[in-house]
Amino acid sequence: MGSQGQQLHIFVFPLMAPGHLLPAVDIAKLFAAKGVRVSIITTAGEERAIETSLCRSTEAGHRVRTLLVEWSSSAVGLPDNLSSVKTPDMHMDFLVSTPALRPSFERLVKNHRPAAIVTDMFFPWTAEVAEEVRIPRLVFHGTSFFYLCIKGKLNLAAASQESHTDSGDRFVIPGIPHRIELSRSQVIDTKRMRPDFLDMFMKIMEAEGRSYGTVVNSFYELEPDYADHYRNVIGRKAWHIGPVFLRNEDAADNAVRGGKCAVDQAIFSRWLDSKAASSVLYVCFGSLSRFKVTQLREIAAGLESSGHPFIWVVKNSGQGNSSGQWLPEGFEERVADSGMGMIIRGWAPQVLILNHVAIGGFLTHCGWNSSLESFSAGLPVVTWPMFADQFCNERMLVDMLKVGVEIGVKTCSLVEEERDAVKAEEIASAIGRLMGDSPEAEERRRRARELKAAARGAVEEGGSSYKDLARLIQELSGQQSTASHVRT
Image 1 (spheres, rainbow, N blue to C red):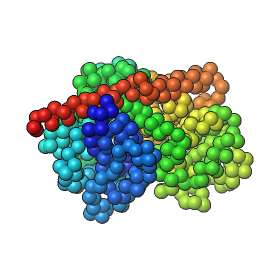
Image 2 (image 1 turned 90 degrees about the horizontal axis):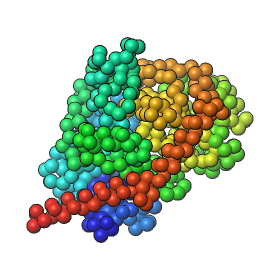
Image 3 (image 1 turned 180 degrees about the horizontal axis):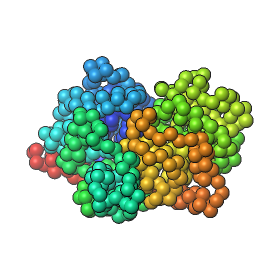
Image 4 (image 1 turned 30 degrees about the vertical axis):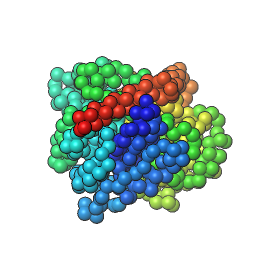
């Protein structure tokens, strides 16, 4: 495989948003570590952060670099650093404006002639580019096989009376290996979407059908029924190659993954070192989630009244200021003085923190990256989904994998004012169930430890993801050889 890989040049084109960018860069590193020459396509605003995360790979002699597409952010009222886009409206403005990247991307493809492209789902127009130059396009969604199997069924099932249970609002997702129930309010309502956003999703679905296959950041042992269903029933070619972040082999890799920590790493490391094993709750809601000030105060009160030590990562934008005016009076001083809690405002090296021996649970928004990171650290979770695939991921965590405790929210929305308010008492109760010593809590911890072993085994030599990556590289090398023969 090594000689084939060295002949292979692949473009990886990630969406400029942390939840998509980070795993895509990890995918690029995976290919490069196997001898593939990789070019990561990005904008000038993202280049520095990507180059920083590539340092260890380039020092190891792996052939991975960045190539820039031209982007006029001011023309659509967006910042140069697209991963810093904060509000839902700005995020949607960016997503529907990505066709502006096409001319520059086409020039790169025609100038460098990669053997294949791996592009984010939100760049559906790259399927046409791939067809024009006759190379395979692999699509990366950044979610699970489970969600890929059900995403096309959700709105139809929610609207169908035949799928509804006796409880009225709830419905069963048809035609999948497990009985999974959701509420209509937990599904993205396409009728309320901006027309240009809905049109983009239709193009995404159409482009997926025209693409060569799908690269999935998952591992077979996690969801074998859905990996098989996606391939054999839905009929899509797919390769499971995750968890891709596990290719970051040590703390130094994980410390720089995604950005610079908002506090000195030594500070939170010392704090965690002072805590008992599995005693600390890690709290983080991802890069896009935002809360009203009233909800932030309820979270603070719930954390304090739970009695469990915690690290709470809070994004700066839209969530109060450095003086902590959004917190209950005296909260930060009390938890700091008592050693009960630490607040990190801004970016934190989540994988590094989750794998510290003191961490015993994770209060999460159920984004797929965070879900994978919890599995791989062997941690049970409190689930607090908000939008996108998160309510479906919650069902996977709670019903299928049995490692989750629900906080109880029912409304899927990007807009914080539309989401359920969760009281401090409910938050503390869920934390208590997660971190307590009941038989149910012990069973969740046991299941989480099993998933950790399976995740790490999947990426080791001979593991399911290791072998599927090898098969993918071999297949792309064969495609390249065939194409070269046809051209000659």
